[in-house]
Image (cartoon, rainbow, N blue to C red; front, side):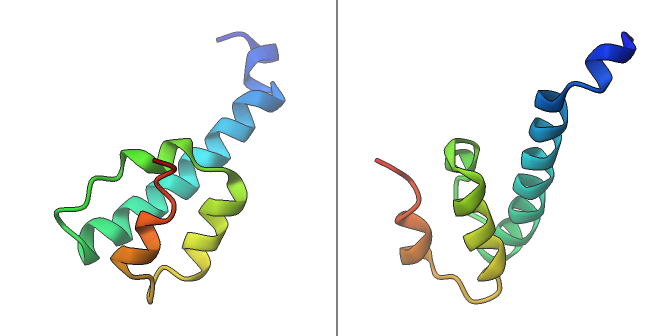
Length: 69
């Protein structure tokens, strides 16, 4: 693998976003097994942080506010 690509800021930003999404997916799949979580990939860092901050008490209705539909 090219060392320059490994140190690319975009690479690390993507890794950070994927780590947040994975954390959210693990908890929400446990709390809401039938919920489709594809919408997480279109959210901003701020929206992902909001969900993480409230993940233990967030409701389905609140999650639907993040779907951007």
